[in-house]
Length: 483
Image: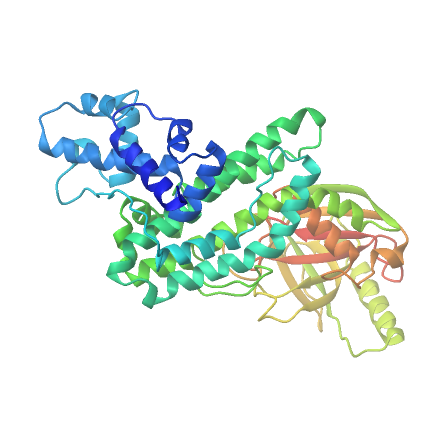
């Protein structure tokens, strides 16, 4: 018996038993296959899980029964294997967009029985492409080390696939009326449901490793946020309406304005490209990254500390303050630069009544609230002074406040990750193999591993701390966060 016939017989078996309890062993037996293998084949061919298929068919038939008969809602719930009327009503509302009591012929959706053909075209091909391009963890009962290795590899693969998903959603040729049903299967059952399955498996694997003390607890916070978004409970206020509409009634995706909010724009492999619309898929891309960062970043940040180490790391919220300094000139020779720093320190030393509680020479860096791909890097030598400190002639200032006002650029947030390093200062400032230098990378990577938000790009800034004065190497780092 070939696999097409096996799948067809399994689907026929499901159709005959939708009003009784079904388990995957019985279904896979009709396909002469093990349960795990059959579920994998079913998902790859149809773009949805067996559970999703059974649920969709039962809720479709339940809606028809509601309209055709005088049966009570509780009787229909029991007929289609729901234990309570409440659980049935919740599932019905998620699927149809209306509660059972409000169902009409016009507002319910009908999910037709699947039929397997030799040629699978269109949406299925896109489904397989999008699903298979993501880097899934398929290992059974992996070790924690294997999970962290998978997460690291996913960081090199998944960002580009999310961008491909964005591109697909924005392609009008792929969203004609006749493709809408297939596209719903691709996006909702193929991509989103598969991520939910992956998250559930990952939780199970992590729970199995908790007694070892290896598990970074921040991963659970990331998974919770991911599951919310995958269920349509978005944490983005401006996307809430569009996402809710899509989950309630997928036909809203006929509207390109809705699709644009869902798709967002491509943000590149690093996720840092500037965009005009940051959409739902962009949020999923970032949260997928946060799960992976929580898994592999702790060890990665430790491995980066070659010749130096992190002595202190904590999050601080400074009171309102003002940075006062002078812009760094890359073209200036080192001797002239040293003399300029000495002059800056002398000027600020004289302003004793305006000193802040963080009175160190600082090299402050930012992009004026723009992305690194569009806004140039800017560096300034100076110090943090009290808020409203008068600015000397020839100096510039930037204000800092504890709370995020949502506006790009200054005033910046005075919430920071504070890191203190010791060891070989040349190793701390090594640039080769790092995004910026070693201190920057290690500080950032610890933040990412702990699931703390970096307010990039609107309020993003960093600073090197010269604890022993401007003429000694910096051994401390400040990195903006939004706690």
